Length: 368
Ligand code: GDD
Ligand code: MN
Figure 1 (cartoon, rainbow, N blue to C red):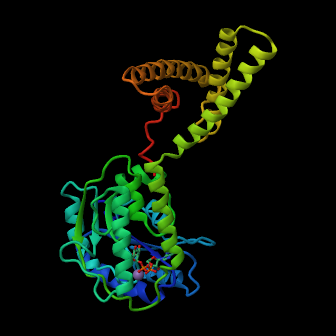
Figure 2: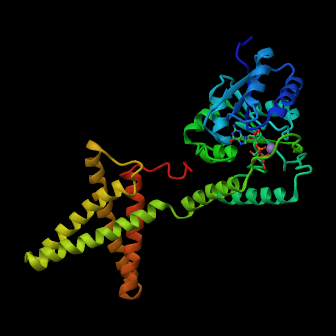
Figure 3: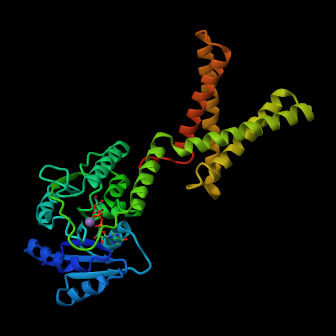
């Protein structure tokens, strides 16, 4: 028999003193025959929840308390609870008895059927929101639709705070989580390096008996910001915008160099233009390295192959620019349209190829 529990139930708590006792009783009843433990992660609740948990732990070592001082946050509490146990299967649920612990054995069963994660859902078959207020239901439905649009998943209850996953799945994503706000499940799905195989088990969302909900307007705002961030990142990559800005600076540098060499220093035009091109490309490389890719700048010896690949990609981009403009002009378009077409295709080429080649950007959409 293994010494550590097979299943750890992680329960974030804030002012839940009257709920922890009944929850432990229910877990004991429903997890009969399974090796389990429960980790309450309490953010120093003023009502003394942590003391109650430790009291319970004195007579039942399966009940553990992780108390955090000077901290708040449901998502980070879940993460730290999961890190504090060795169990190979992790469940997350609320303390307030709104989540039906009775489906845990079925969730465990579904996990063994090749799923990475099993979600307790209020909206799957057999699920319901019970006597949840109409307002809350509407908000939840809207949030679900929104997150589906943004992240393209098929979860029926992406905001669920009730789920079960294999430990290795958690470990693969934990360093990528934004850890912000309430939406840990959504965060896990959005941050996983690969698509997760999931199943859903419906349950009836119960009414809260004791204590009160901490879901505030601030929490909803957090959620909207999180989705907005992801949306902007997907439709209009911020890198593209920065790359464009650097391109503008490059153009100004190009003209300044060309003007001073040709006009003031009296160099031949071809020479002046050549020097201007190389100067602008070089400064674009260093500016992009500092601004556009500031989260992953090339350093030290990496700068040399980086600069070379940047030159190569841009030179090819120039050729493509020329060829496209020539082709468009060939079918009878006006000079400015032909020039613009070439420039746009060349710029997109440069952005994409230097991103992949120079800054090795393959994870652009993996991380949210
Ligand atoms: N440690 C810790 N720190 N726990 C917290 C904190 C915090 O800052 N805020 C809330 N909790 C705990 C609560 O004590 C409870 O056990 C659980 O997290 C959920 O908080 P509730 O305040 O009961 O949230 P809710 O019922 O409004 O929201 C639930 O349903 C939502 C779906 O509508 C949660 O399960 C959400 O995750 C879920 O999205
Ligand atoms: Mn609740």
